[in-house]
Amino acid sequence: MNQTAQPPIAWSEALTRLAQRFCEHVAVSDGVGHSLTYGQLNHYAHAFARQLRQNGLKPGQAVASLLPNSIEAVWVSYGIRLAGATEIPLSWGYTLDEIQWCAELAKFKTILTLKKRAPELVGAGFSTLSAESIAAEPSLPNAAIEPLAPVAFDQSARVLFTSGTTGKPKGVVYTNGARWLGEQLLKATLPFVPEPGVTILLMTPFVHGASLLAFAWLDHGATIILHDGVNIEKIAPLLDSDSLDAIFAPPTVLAKITSALAGRRYDHVRCIFTGTQPLTPALYQRAHAMFGPKVRITFGKSECVNPITVLGPRDTHHYFSQAEVPAGACVGWPAPGVEIKIEAPDALAAQNEERSDGEVLLRSPHMSSGLIDSNGFRPHEPEGWHHTGDLGYVDQAGRLILTGRIADVIKTGGYRVNPDEIEVQLAANTLCAQICVTSLASDYWGEIIVAVAEGTQPDWQQQCEALLQGMSRHKRPRLYVSVQALPRNPQGKISRKAVSKMVFATHRLLDGSHPQLEPLSV
Image (spheres, rainbow, N blue to C red):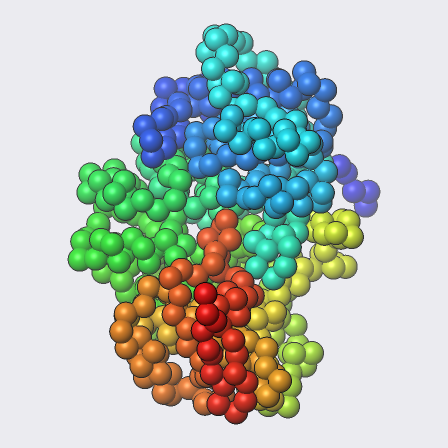
């Protein structure tokens, strides 16, 4: 049978239909009083796409955006894909060195940004376009919408950058087709169908998870509320006014909300979308006390965006209501069309290895085409499988349980130790804000397990030791360090390597059978 080419994706026509149907409804509002109707979103996106075309843009050509969470981030993202360009969304917190690294990989020269970031970018040799100038064009509100041709299904459409927690970020390439399929799959697995007036609060960087939910929400004529970070003073009034139907809150965000507003109840919130990091039993109980059984867990990666797996609110509540919740992070069942397999653990095994899990491999129609690193473009493995680098297993119910990262496994005293297993136990510590378990290189032990905590109170270390009493001695930290703040990347993720470097930058290791850390003199 001859394979036929996939039909093109009509992004322009789809957005225009949304504008015709929901013209005066609010599509986007932000945390500083700005909003955008569907009609305005359509005008701004098409105007920007038209300007790119007039500037000589060719199909698939890379165009970057450098914007905070704002209404501009939304219409710029729509505009780039309407124009048939390859969108390169850069995190607003990126340094100039990080932007230049991304440009080296993705080959872009033009960046759409705000005026205050333009001078440094121009000084580095980039061409910039101003979001403020495009939005302020006097003719824009009354300009006729010029329909744009559909874009090729297999054409490059977006490059996302990995978090860089295990080295320099890599570019992840998506086609128009994979992007479209991912959005349809996400909509199909929502716990309820949004409609005009239904709101979702998005606080994490728009360049990753927030944008995925935004596109799914906006396809139904609903409203996204886009805040630039977690500001409790702005979030509390929204919750108190019963104006939020859903919140995207990865565990770090959920922890901040449930801590700052502890004791309050918000039954009107229909769903808390979470993912990106393991949800601990203790944090789930805090979320349940505040919102009820509304937490939905998904698994996604830069290489294959949400949803890879889904654990709906009812199933999440059932899982965390067990008398004893298994170690690891349950992320649910594979979404339709997603295949999961666990690579035989033989390649990971060691003489004293205790775990029986293996590396998680996945493939899906909405997965990326491959990765770009310093050596150029690298497609995924033969037959479409992607090695995630995650450790895990499939339980008897068919759910995927993640147990850590291969790169994070600590080799100490002849044993292999998964730091995630330790962090899960320490998550119940009430005398610190967050704990990262990492390792320090040691001639005596190979690696020394160290627990590094931020926001500590007296006796936090003693509480850690009490929480780990039931764990094998070789898995318990030999060192404890208190810091003012753990290092996080622009996506809010903690890099264990960065934490180790932080410890060595402020302490000297006294190696041996009973290692110690000696603070360096300032």
